[in-house]
Amino acid sequence: MALAHAWSVALVGLEGHLVEVETDIAQGLPKTTLIGLPDASLSESRDRVRSAVVNSGERFPDRKVTIGLSPATLPKTGSHYDVAIASSLLAASGVLDFHELSRIVMIGELGLDGRIHEVRGALAMTLAAARSGFARIIVPELNAGEARLVPGIQVYGARSLRQVLALLRGTEIPDEEPPRAEPKLMSESLTRVPEVDLEEVLGQREGRRAIEAAAAGGHHLYLHGPPGSGKTMLAERLSGLMPDLSTEESLEVSAVHSLAGLLTSDAELVVRPPFIAPHHTASLASLVGGGSGMPRPGAISCAHRGILFVDEAPEMHPLTLDTLRQPLESGYIEVHRAQAVAKFPARFLLVLAANPCPCGLSGTPTGVCTCTPQVLNRYRQRISGPIKDRMDIQRQILPTARGATTGERPESTAEVAARVQVARDRQSFRYRETPWRLNSEVPGPILRRDYPLDEASQRLLEEHYSSGRLTARGFDRVVRLAWTLADLAGVERPTVDLTHQAFQLRSGALLTELSDVRPIKGDSAA
Image (cartoon, rainbow, N blue to C red):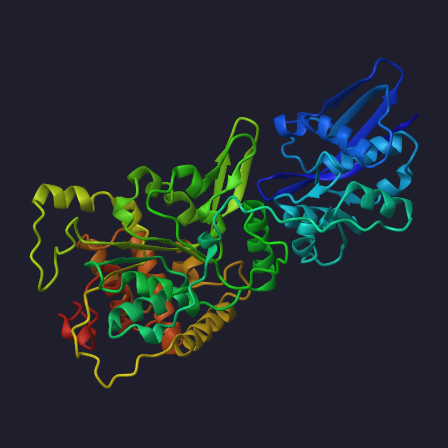
C-alpha cells in the first residue's frame, strides 16, 4: 500500500484551477474519507467510485482510505473528479503506475457500472490544463469534441473506467457500448441564431439604419412601436449583420457555452455571434447566473460577444432588467456566493423591444390609445431611466404603409453585412494599439482625449448637453455612435452632419440633415 496522486480541475466561474487528488491507504477499519471542501455531489463520489471500481473488475481496498483534494482551501463542486479519484485509489492499491498519473489530467463522472458520463465545462477545464503545462487529458467521450478545440493538448475520449485503466496500463483498450447523450437542461432554442434575411423586411428605412449602426459599432438598441410593426423582425436579423468571431473570441464564447451545458457532443467552436432571447418572465438568476454552491453562467454570459434580445421588455420585472446596468458598462458579471465569487464575461449587444403602451397604440398615426395617463406612465416607467440612458440607439418603429415599397428591392443581409465588415475593419485599424476593437468599447476619457470631434460637432453636442437633452453618459455615447457612422460612411472622422445624425439616433428623432434644423450658434457654415 502507498500514497498516490492524480490531477483534475476545479472551475470558479470560467477560471480553472488544477486540483491534486491524493489517496492514502493505511491500516485500519474499512472506511473512506474525502477531505478538501467537497460539496454534496462530490462527497457522494465515495459510493460511486466504490461501485464503479468493483463493477470494472478491480478490487476496492478493505482498509482505511483517505482521499484529499488540494488546495484544501478551494471549494470543490461537481462530480467530474470521479475518474481522477478512482485512478488515484487504484494507483495507491498498487495496480496502476502512479508515475503515469502525474503527467495526465482526468475529468469525468462515473456511473455505478463504470461508465463515464459527460460533464459541464470540459472546454474550460481543458484550457486550464493546457495553460498549466499538461500535454494529455482524459475526458468523457461525449465531451471529447469540445475538449479537442483546445490546441496544444492531446485529448482521450473514454467511455468507461475500464478504458481509462487500459490506457494507463498501455494494454489493449476494450470496446464499450457508445454512450447515450443526456438531454440538455437548458433549451437549445436559447442559443438559436435566426436563419432570416434582411431583404424580407419591407420599408423601415430608419429601422434598417439603426440595426446597421448597432452591428457596426456594437451599440445597444431600443426599438419601440405598435405590435406587428417589425421590431422583432429587425432584431432577429441583426446577428446576421455581425462578422464571425475571431479564434480567441470563439474559444471564450465556447467555454461559456460548455459550462452552461449548451455544447453538443459533436461540438465545434462557436464561430457566429450568439443570439440569446430569454423570455420576459425569466428570473434574475437565469439572466445573470447563479445557483446553489458554485454559480453557473446566465443568459447574459451566454450572449457574450453576441446579442441579448429582450422582447416585450416592459413586461420583464424592473429589478431583473435593472441588473443589466453594471455588465452593460463593465463587460462582465460577478456572482457572489458564500463559497466563492465567480466572474463571467458579459460583453453583449443589448436589444430591447417594447410596445408604447399596454394597448400598443399610443403615439401611432392611425390608432387610438385607450390607456389612461396613469396606466401609460406606469407602463413606460417599467424600463428605468438608467437603462434607457445606456441605450445608444432608440428608434420608434411604425408599420410600413401598404404599397409604399412597390418597385423597391430591399437590401439583403449580405449587402449590409459587407458594409458592417468594412466599418469594423476601420475600427480595428484605428484601435490596433489599444485593448479595444469597437467604438462602443472605448472609455469616454480616452475618446475625448485621443479621438476628439471637430469644433462644430463639439459645439453641437455641448448645446444639447446644456439644454438637458443629453446626459454626461449620453454625450460620450453619441460621440461613439458618430464615429461608427463615420466608419460606415468611409470618412476619416465624424462630420457635424454625422454627429447630428448620431444624436437623432440616440434621441429617437426622425433622421434629417443638419440644414433642416436651426443653425448652430456661431457656425453659419452649418
